Image (cartoon, rainbow, N blue to C red; front, side, top):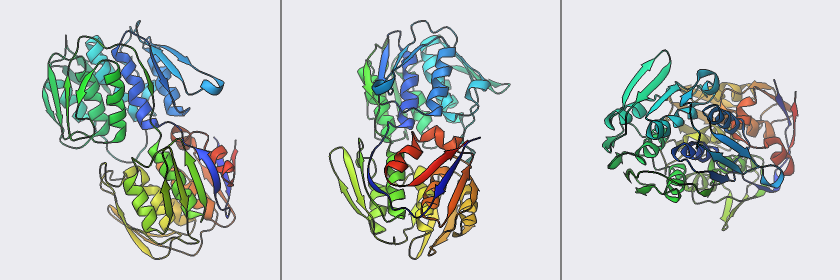
Length: 420
């Protein structure tokens, strides 16, 4: 199993490009199930999760074509011969986003059998909101032997209210509603930019959607959707991660092919920490002070501070001047990286969903273990500033969400390499 070796102490400087957003690409690729016509996507990141989903779609009968070389980020999907609306446990056990095939399959085929998903062990992310929504639209849904089995001749528009804000739930129900009979209204909908990107793709395919980006989304069902070409939005979490890495190392970087439009809460906190951040049309510049000032954060659904950036800010607070309080309100088990950061010398105390971080002068290299995707990123940031060598084990989590991580870090001056 691959490991990452980081020799700390290098200040990140220079320029690198941000990849397409994994959390936008996954639902958008699933949207191809809704049409018999080919759909082409560009700026698709080359990640393990993307590869897993494409294999899953191929198993269902979808023709998958991937570009190479300069077109490596282009994927064309043709679901005209979709004949197996089943997502097996073997295919989806490593990726919770696999549940996103449920809505499109039910809408297109009138039936779906989808394994309950796996993925990062960061707490309960129940699919009951997905099931409840499909039932309200007329589907018969049963959970048997670890599978969600849904059937309906044709979904019918309905008024849906989710008990909790759920990104994948909003995306699943929005896709399902595109081919339903009548109008569907999703209340308490997720407002994330990735939801908006999916809606934009669906509209380009002929869907009638309004309100994406607000907490009420309206979808007027149509008889069929057509093919289109859609470019995946830049990855705001990858962007934020590299900004944090540069901030922690006292660096100065420019990130291209991205935007600050989706990162207001993160950039505000980086500026509070003492960084100078300049937004350009398709790029972001950051210049960090010699040592950061601690900043407290509280995670909440978009547009507030994202839970996917909590671990990275714990890492930068670990070496900042002062003390910070971090409150995690989204997932109940998302402080597992704190123990690993403590192995590097971080001063962190956990009390329920709250972490108290007292900045220290320096961290020391050690062997640590990644527990989930964003926890892995926090350990990378800590390793970049730690004295000596840090070895991060189980980096398959990183490969699920960060494209060419070690190459991009090396381009910025980090001393990092992969060990087999």
